[in-house]
Image (tube, rainbow, N blue to C red; front, side):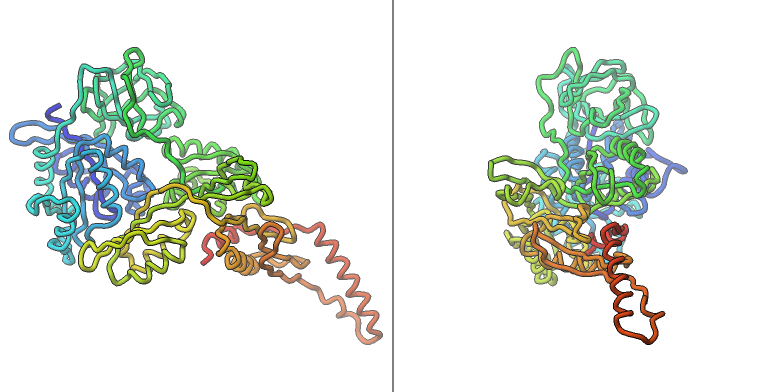
Length: 595
């Protein structure tokens, strides 16, 4: 155990985690020549294109220092706020963390939130100043920020560059010297922490875990504590660039287990593995079921593809355990699924993966957050879809989720960012100057307000400099109303939404205007109305296409023309009773981008 070091990399998005990981792998000769490519650990095409890490990755490196061979287990974590739970479990599987800060941008919001998690788990922090080869690097300023944040010595901060490979040897030496080796009892019953899982279409689910106590051999009967399921360990091993089978994994090792599991519900990140015959006393603390924060309906464009969509989402769930779904139907869109996502980026990535990996064309409805509804008779229900809200006559009050949002920005943009947050029903809780021109703002805000376009606006107001991180703080009661859209008196359930009473009128007005542009003209007048309960708050009319029926009437009495017009009017009325209005796909998308 003395020669094992487990460490992870934490940083804000785009501070060069994956590039620096490449240099570490190259330096320790874990990968060479033809295997080397940019972002080696990011295996998904989507990760390479967007330059972000979506899944945690683990890999084992061998490193020789002063005549001793060391085993280094690296876990590369995502930086984006949507994948925070995955980061927390990866941190729990380590004893040390490389805190990477971009020398050109300084400390940003996620750097701080991931650092707090690492400090909570008593990890040894090694500060690294990355991108030192850039002409616009500001090492002294950023060093001051790091000193303020973690209170280390200036000499401890390592200067490095993921591009040129500068400082990589120093980082490896620092890991070996200062990160503590894993502690555990090799003689105790087996206790292993699952920190990730991937799906392989031939072998089932492969769970990545760290052995905290005891040891596991190939062929052992094992049990997953939180799900209570028992399996046989068909294969155990360590994680190189590929899976490397071993006969036994001992205390402190990080590796994988394959036991022919086919359904993702049976493997949960954060669960504990133990032996069936000699189980451990208690599970490793910190396990949670991942809670989705944003819900949206996902429907196939062609209703015949419903079963294919189900199969695709199930396969995707095996690869991405934080996606949850249940069937639902809509009068406007037919059969589909109500899916739960961790945030808007997660939703975007799932949509993109459905399109690329499974070739599915889907319509996504307006995303919304989970609400708690209380009726006058004292009943309580969790509402994921606006159409499930109890009748207004029975409804007592509704509670919505609140978050604590942390924004770090340059001082020039404070005014505009404050007005953005206050316009989204935020309350300023704290304003703290990190340096003379960098400010940390903390707001309490409803989660529903940041679901749509908050992040885009934040970036455009701050010219890309502000960084944003949030965590949920619980539920508060709010004056929420259900806004319905009616076409010819028929409610379109896919367009209905829950909104705050103060925003309802403007939102209804804007939806009607937008739909008027997008709904094609019919042979009859189409009334577009926005309503709260039975009260209509806005209306637009799409005028009918009319044929000039009086064209053949030249001369003669006015009553002849009137007779033809009356006849046309009757026809239109009859048509309106039987005609139905198709809502085009782009109308759903336009409502999402209403601004």
